[in-house]
Image 1 (cartoon, rainbow, N blue to C red):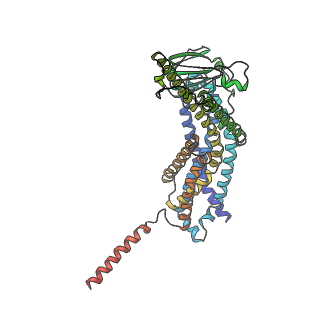
Image 2: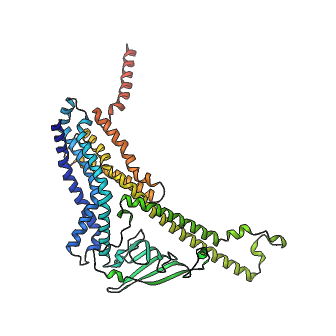
Image 3: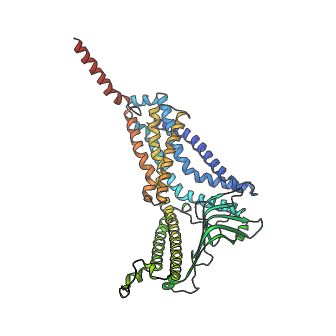
Length: 483
């Protein structure tokens, strides 16, 4: 049996290494193409470009490995079946699972290797690549801002926007800015429908010009008791145009190897994620509780609850506004409208900020479980590829390549769909990370069972046999009637 095991391993490993490096090359070139705009024309040396490619290859290796296992397993078993070697093995009373035993052991080893790779090498590569890219983008600060997530590269500011457009990518849509320059948290919030970034080469400042927005700021004293924080005054205003400057002198540093960002969710190992998650969950709960107290205080809910019924002494109109003269009516209505708009704007800002904080927490939570799920993808996809190869009885790069791409696309989109749902709190992080595996495991079990029995992917006779019996019975009845 050792000769057979060596032969099966050789049949698998030759296409495995070939497909792994082909897939790795394609994924690295895709990443380079996406980053080309940030790299081209910045005067970056080849040394740093090759460093970027090296770190990128480490990042995508964890994704290339399951694809290589899937494709090579289809090709290896397809070649065995196509050359009738699989039939010869079955005639010697060797089952499919016994034939696959060395490959199963190899795939288990690859899954364990992928787990340690994702836990140690992958976070290191992401840390190095992201910091290198950010340092390259600092050559043109407007490019350092990424749509769809909070940008924290600029000191004392957190900037988020939905879209960046224009020839120089300096026009923004749906802008949200937290000004942290006071050193007391996000006491100053600015929102705007559109915005524009204006920078001059060599300047230490970047100008933000915002249009059709809202400005909110909480005023706190330098020394304030914790119990009195909620009682501090606040100011808010709507604006048509608002401009301010941001100091970007730190962006003039030419050290491309500097590492400033080390705590992103994909830069941490599983142990670090496990330690970080409880702290983030406590911070999120404290934030929600704090905003709930603020809304409770601003609506004067406590006073309304404790107030005695004082209108019994007076004969008041049920339509409250009719109890005031015309001058006071305008004052009351104006104050009510202003208070309602301010409360609505504050509630929307709180809701938006709470969703962002929750999504950030979900990113860390999903990443923790997704690392484990992705490491097992090699084993799951192998039990799909190997039986499928023996069923289709076709080797080479043609049909196996098409099937492998189709299967991995389903797996990838299921994984992405689950992650997105988990990030939006539609499902739990565990469900989001494992949804692709839950979809693929029954399919793997079905294919393995069909291949072990030596039947095709679908037994057409199961559907045709009842129809054949029906017509055969009608023919017999016709013959008997003619007699």
